[in-house]
Image 1 (cartoon, rainbow, N blue to C red):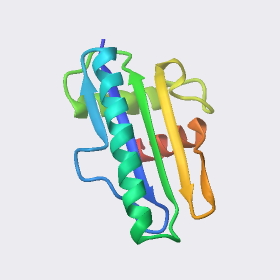
Image 2 (cartoon, rainbow, N blue to C red; image 1 turned 180 degrees about the vertical axis):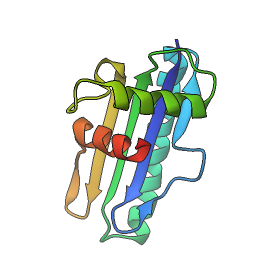
Image 3 (cartoon, one colour; image 1 turned 60 degrees about the vertical axis):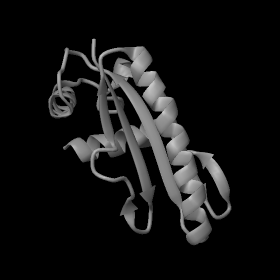
Image 4 (tube, rainbow, N blue to C red; image 1 turned 30 degrees about the horizontal axis):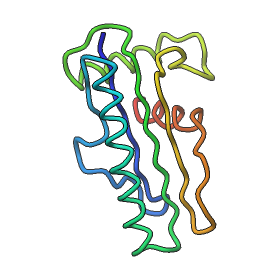
Amino acid sequence: MSYVVISSYENIDTGDMQAEGEAVALFESEAAARQHFASRSSTLAVAVRNAREFSVASTFITWLVVLRMPLEVTSVGEALEDLELVLEETESIDDPFGELVVEYQGSRNAPEGTTDHPQQEALRELEAWLS
């Protein structure tokens, strides 16, 4: 079974703040995916803290998700193609990734404080990105 970790780090005023290749990573085991998830979560938390020092009035949204791939994949490109296929074939418009979600974390860090970023909203953003 393959697992993919997808992350988003965005300044809502300026857009995506991830370097190319940081947003998607593929793993052969759930344990390795969860380890990357935890590491990436820490990295994003530090990045937001540092960015807030220079851009106090900005709002930053970060989210991460671990998805269990429905079929074995061997590359990030193949994983993204399979996720696009899931979107095309799914019966559930409200929750196209359904049982594929293994773990999720998201936050919205605004000048007035930090709140959770809903999983459903993040998955809609992922769906839009894949489409």
